Image 1 (cartoon, rainbow, N blue to C red):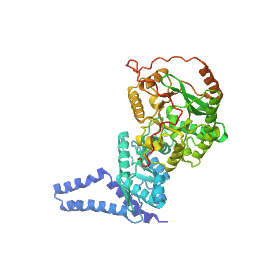
Image 2: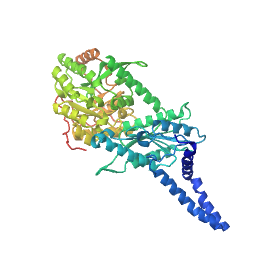
Image 3: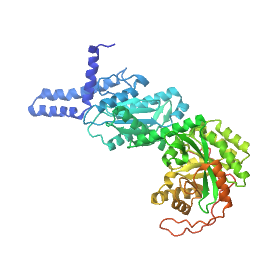
Image 4: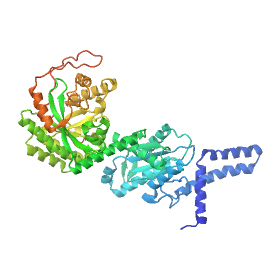
Length: 554
């Protein structure tokens, strides 16, 4: 172990380096030179002219010397940096730096987390050794883009954390600008073994949360919540922590944990939500949902969740793991029972999670259930989570969807909730129906911007020959408006609430026996009656008019 005398030069060099990073210290050198000229002290002028460049050169040489950290980091204090992860400090050093920053009165700091997009696919492409070199290169770039007093920490294979040196009045706009600049730094091309890599990164950032007993842990958790929100919004995005985000993430985590526990204990009960033709109100299908016991809320189904919670659980890589397998058999059995009772419906929708779609056995499981029930594959509509439409392609998911599509299984995906659906993805995936997310249908009656977005989605779908279904419809006014815009089908509590299988069978029988009730014409706010442009488009029992698959679509 080095003695205190041996460590003294390094400590002095570190303190001198931190001093030379401050503008107020650097400003003393030209002041000294001007004073020497004014007082006719030639030696002072000469000394000033050579001392500053010499100190800066020594500082640069010391940072690049062999055995120094890959990232030139000066921790705020005398605590030695960790040598984990290729000489880049890890989570402990980051939390320690946050704690020291919080101890500086009247100053603020920031915790910025960055996650490289598509890291798993990069590993498969170039291997772990080359990927580790890429991570080192990214760490070096981040360090170059920051001040010597800032901290860069390697938190995982594809994740980095940054703690800014305390400063007075670090505004949210400043943190946002720094996060944008760091992401742009990572996006610069990387030349590696004759190939050029272009990476993108998601970012989440937060200031110091001084109203918590553990400021460092709370600030880090806030930045993690912001990063999670950014990654769920898609690649190459960033988010700042907003009040309430941690609570929402904790609530979603409890929901996901409750569903996972119910799945493992066999406590998930299938429920069904009817789907209707927007024009005419005919029953046009069912959506299979799950009811499970939630300790803090009682029996809960996906239909009871908010639009945001439902969307996030579908997008989580493991959020609905195994749920499709639980709902698949009851959904197909219910459809067959309705057929036997003379109440045939065209299709039933079943949501599939990302983990289900990545499983090589999922397609075989679906086809076996269809064969067992004797139903045509087109009568099953698998609802895909929005991340499958991301530009970054997943070979495992695409293989599953290709096998299902070739067998004639219907595929549908949500557009506009939480992000825009991509035309290239619709072609690549062979989607046969476009769902309009509940995030757009909520408040659509009073929000003209959402009306315009839904109109654009419906127009795009009609151009591509795809039927549309609006989910989360909670009022009759919203149903009328969606019908007036041209949406083909609606689903939600206003047209029909979710119910158990037995209640569904009895309800469908009563509905079939009741005389048809005429519906009033749908109107758009501020418009007259919608002109009759022809008969409404019915849902077809034949396979949906899926777009042709493009083998090399981007």
